[in-house]
Length: 66
Image (cartoon, one colour):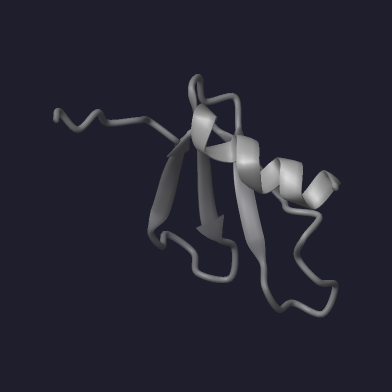
């Protein structure tokens, strides 16, 4: 399998609605990156980013929506 690099420097991040309001569980999702959903811990500047393919989001989102 070939690893692909993504330039996330211009990606717009937003805090997940699953994050709580007191600074804990701060999950951020970057938008505008085709075919993947970059996710990171917004409390860690420059930290690791997990790239989840679009198909990987189907079940988790279905579970949250109900």
